[in-house]
Length: 569
Image (cartoon, rainbow, N blue to C red; front, side, top):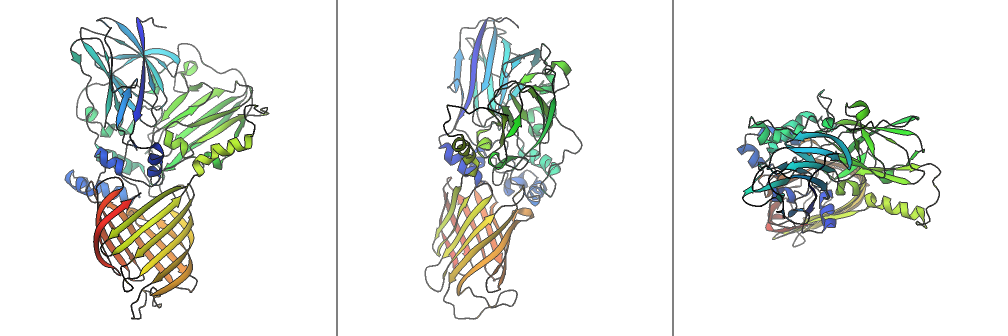
């Protein structure tokens, strides 16, 4: 243990002015409002300007939405509850042990010190052999102890910057002239998108291109870092392979049981799972006291996941042999495969293993390790009810809506959905009988890891005073002037994020429809198009003013041209 003059706790956190329940609901409906606030929508106008039009097309051809490093825009980041914290008592030559804790909901922090290198001496509360680095990234709920030296007279900045580089927070050590740590430049999002295009297969699976990544040693995101790409500066960045325990950490003798988990999910609906199952869709994992558990984790998603095990330290197998470091949280980057192991040292109880990004955990990314023959806990009078409450998190339904109020009438959609089920209700309401009105209701089940396929049953009810007999594209009599039918069909997400809808109603009439919503023309301008075999079509534009309010216009083949506002919830 290195003896230092003093210690400081550095608690990093994030803050948003919005209710977190609304943040979570919005993420499930793929809002890009947070990307708008960050200036990170990666829209078509920007793609053309930055000569990445082909990159954008490939991205959407593979059914991916715009790349985001962090899903939520935070209004402030804090160090010990302050945007700027200060400790002025330190003098030149002083060594300070900083206990850095990431207590945020979902923010990763890049940490750098203006006074030179940081010596990492502990991780997640367990000592490691000191290693000197220029910077480190600290995942959600991770902790690092680092020792820094005040080199000279002045106030030296410990700068903690969000991984998406939208905001920073600082701790100043010492007094006098401020010495700033190097600021991190804006990410090159299209470079990151281009990289992800190469890693994503057309079926939505990931391909590491033979790189066999592990332990943060190959951060694919570095293609977006201007400070790495555009400079010759030799920056030493911490990775897990550099951590070594000062004493042997080998597990006690005993049977070894190996478990494998694939970290899965999809960004479009914000569903996060292990082996494509949420915690409520899986059984508890029974373990026995005295056995050793080895877990192999493969991240087959586009996001980082800081996986945390309650109540146990685990060894991170990082090439250090008997001196593998002990941790409680492991940050697993996209396409990585990492191995951890722990000794089942407790006598009884349920122990949660989960992603520590709040919104990933709430969507179901976790498992429960349960010791066999655990006695009843007297503090939990109804264990079944208690477990059901845990499972309720990822079973919740979230409501979303888009309501157009324009000069030619109203159209819109209401959605109620959870992890696997979706209720859709679409309507168009004209100003008179000639314009007509219609309502479609669907109840569907989302299938597969990517949830591109949804079979449904529904009801279609509409009326329009038209007078002329029309036929659809299949030569069948078009009944949209007077229709009230039950239908069955399916929706499927096509390349370029078009939604294909095919159905047959109880009278044998077929309809096929293709829709694309929210095409990002510019940072705030969105386009939508629709066409179907009933010879209906529509196209419109929407300019986003705020998260819930847009100015809009559209042309509808039945209702004509209209302009007004759209309310999005």
